[in-house]
Image 1 (cartoon, rainbow, N blue to C red):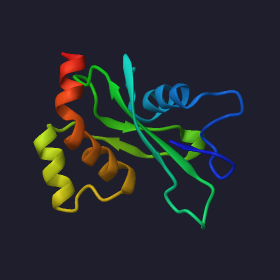
Image 2: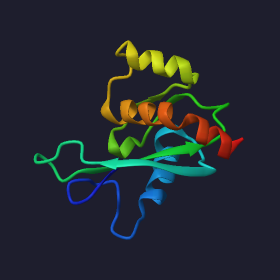
Image 3: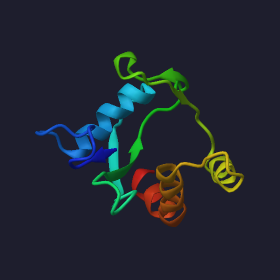
Length: 120
């Protein structure tokens, strides 16, 4: 999720965690039961003040899928659930090719055992 003066997603009195939960519902129809902060970064330092907060969210994905997003924001978001190894392969093949998803998958590859231990 974006924040700072260049981003619009974080409102004045909101915390990044609140935005992560709201965006998961709006953009994927998912209710997050637990959040784990992954990292924060500037996607285009020097060119923008946008600042991204990435979270790993625990949810029930059994009914996830389909098209989501807010009509008033002209969002058209296709939700796809895939196994961990399939997601890594999709990243390797270039089918997952946006920075936030790549960074999140690489973070998960480094921290998966710890996350599984805490969430098992």
